[in-house]
Length: 351
Image (cartoon, rainbow, N blue to C red; front, top):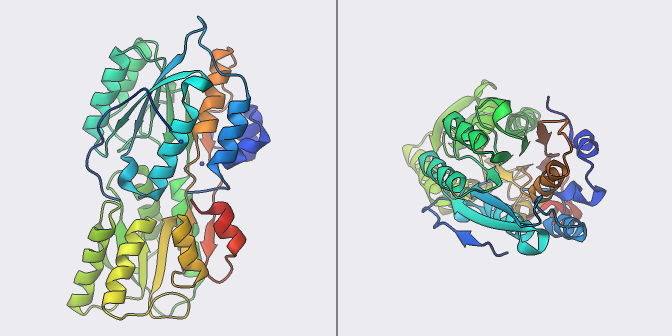
């Protein structure tokens, strides 16, 4: 059922300026749990948001504001998540016809508790970026029984498709496959990889890890740093201290790649194009793409955080009684190579 972005745009009748979709005040916010650092994108969120806000607001049938409960990962988790949260807050405002409440956590059980509260509060829509892919069937069934429509964003979950309206996501497995194919194309005599993983069980971790696991490289160490730069630095430092040889760092987000590089710099180990260690990250934070442009890193995989305009369009269609023809909307993404990236790429795709 997954189709490319262009086809999906036609299916949901979105304006072309929303192609950049992957914001800032909400009605209420639940306290964020303490989080480490993760996961970027097409041109700008602002262009998509401006285009969407020019359309008529999406009023509920009785003329009242549409109540949305938005469950996300901690916005301090990473540059990706900060951009994603800002995009959501810019879109789901009273001016655009919404009454929005936000809850944040990196823990599935806390997110489920927040979802149950939103359902009890009588939201019209539950927007969910799940911390883990499993464990959501019961709460989504509760939402369906209460007449609450669920829209997934950023991450997939293991649940019956009948329990949610649509899923606006990145193809995390494809992100991993694209990165691994790039790594294979480097033609190294041997591949000794330090693999730094994100939060275990998340869609991003599973997709990006899966491709590397299947590649057959020698994995020097494979540990989770939970998207956190400091933990990633500690992992790499421990390998350096052990004296074990490595020539690739495959970090599942930019922040962890940054932490890994800090350990390399501390040990005076060269990295980047033509150097001792290949450095790979994901998310395309602008500062990370600048590292590619300077050839201090080698590769960065795009993960698009600008999903709010897509969700807004889906809600408008539902409010108008229009049936969804596609369940899954895949964000358009690619990878960047330090030897070919341009300043224009940094400006257009960096978040």
